[in-house]
Image 1 (cartoon, rainbow, N blue to C red):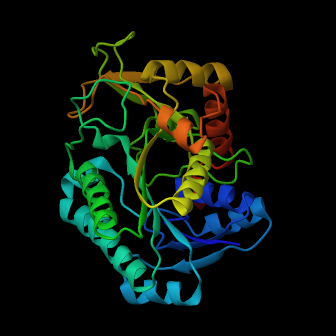
Image 2 (image 1 turned 120 degrees about the vertical axis):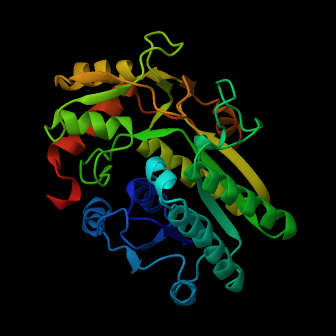
Length: 338
């Protein structure tokens, strides 16, 4: 049984990926410092997969700690989720983001080299496509960034690519996510952002559960069918399954591979509001606000490369995403803290 180290494995996408790894016969080892997650996730993972998960609490930036993790486990590959992810915070505290996201990744790679582990799946983002590319977005398009968070993703992709070019025994997979939403069908794990959500779906569900008064819709004058921004929303379970297939490919191939993980379908903000209301029977009040700097009108994936090479395709419907998001939030109105 291959052992997979999952950094940030108690987080939203990491925890769902752990479930899918175990289902496919891998042993998952989680490293997390709970800076953007909860210890409650571990107990809930045990309830879902019916077994204990190996866990280490600490930061990937701590090389002494990470060396101990590698020395105590025969790790075959790493799936790297551990990073800060709030765009607004990255603008306000850029050094925090560069130190944690870029510095932490470099420290992790140095420990991997010391321990002769040369397979890594990296959690990247569609934000690396910047503002000037036209959807559907393909992996061969130019990349750019408009905020520190985006630059950290670009830098980490470049560092990993350079490493693999310098050392032919390395296998690097950069996965560019679009907009993960939804939750595990059990309702036990889901997205629990700190403070006011930065992303659309947890904002909608927190309005639905009464934690927030109304949804802020940033801009209704974009060149889209209803004037609101269009994005590619993917169920987090589909995304997690994409990591497992990417891992299989990574373990069998050297060099660098880049894949989009999205549905290839764009929905507007108001499409999402209406779909949530229709599926769950809950009204979502909203207010139109000014556009946010850096938001593009339309962003959705061409995910054909992942289908062709990995055999991966998103299977969950928009209705699945809405139902599972609401099941999670309505069962856990205060996230893991309630």
